[in-house]
Image 1 (cartoon, rainbow, N blue to C red):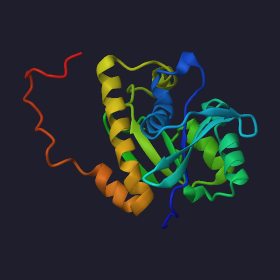
Image 2 (cartoon, one colour):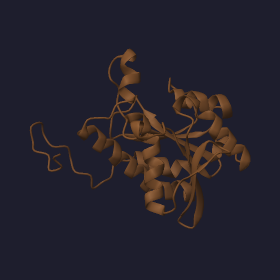
Image 3 (cartoon, rainbow, N blue to C red):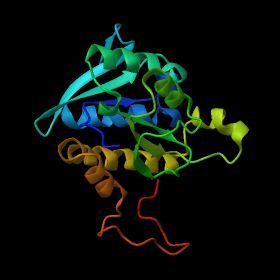
Length: 210
């Protein structure tokens, strides 16, 4: 399926200081980074039960949305926003934490299932599954029954740094997504930079020490 140009990005997460630095809020981190880069500020809108901001990216307008309904009920605000601005599901990119990718990995995906992610599950329940996603890797605890506690905790410093670096890389690709479309953005984001240094052998020092 070929998606139309993206008009809005929804970051999934939980509101409040208690959850601000947890792995589950990686989607919030992403839209916060876009606001930091492109100006503007979030304002709460009762109509959507979400924080909303409009920014300009390379001359084009982009809406950013942070639902305030908590992760498991993200779909209601997304649906309300989409209907009010008469958008199609394919015009909304949903950014979220992804257990199936390790910290430091970030991938664009065109539609699909929810993979057990309760935020995606609820969004898909409200608008269907045909919307693009930005999957921000946070790693997996190893045991299924540990997932809830894992995503609602803050990652160790090294892992958090990798997640935030991935968020930064993805933010840098958004102008490509808006101007040239999903496939070009995927090619840019998923390709290892030619100037990226080779991995150091085991035991070598890391210049980016904590």
